[in-house]
Image (tube, rainbow, N blue to C red; front, side, top):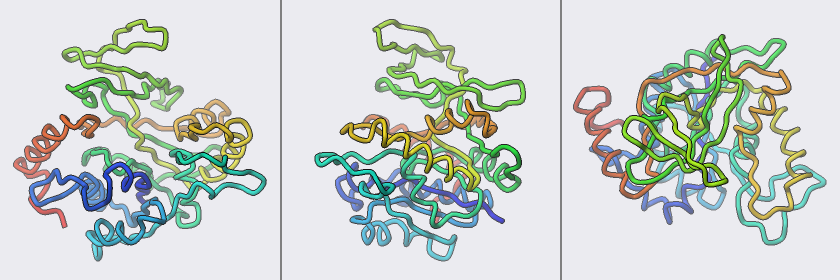
Length: 301
């Protein structure tokens, strides 16, 4: 069975002020998400599921979903604030979404096979999809869940224009994830970096660290874990206005409970994202270079 690509895109409309304002980065007007879909098709994925908000459904299908008609099967799941288990209530003044863990959970009804989960507006590169596609094609749950993630070299994920946050990963001798520590305020320093902790102390990073960029590989067993942990989250943090149910926290809890192995698949490619508006020119130039090298065609779809 071919794996599915789950694209977390519920925030696209609000971030860009309307889907029609999404900035092109490719030579024929491509947006970042086009490259992810293209790479997934090349890597053998059989379906794409977009997690979106129901209020942008028609615009999304017209502006984005229609681009891939005939190239790969497309389906949708809708992340809504009130889509929570019975017995819980959404705080009256809450408007913030519940987070990436909730976004993945609501795709339960349309995914029955191993799948990758990615952010809609991150450029992961061809190697990342190839690595994850191969692993997911053979992923099977036995006594433990068989999960995976693509790890990137820290220095290849940094911005020249300000600080970023990254999940710094630790692995065991088998290449399985043992820990992800969220580091905020990471700034580039030549080929290395440094970060500032919550107490204002500065610590050095080599730049060789493997970091998570929210590119995960799961089998359907993840949904049972998500459902159970989401209930726990709502019981303890559900009344907070800005609390979020993050997928790295879910995965960390599963690892600590010894209920899954998470294989870290290391990509040597650079990750691109527009964290700052000044990053856009770099992304455009980097993609142009990949096109000139023949890695991507001038027109994807």
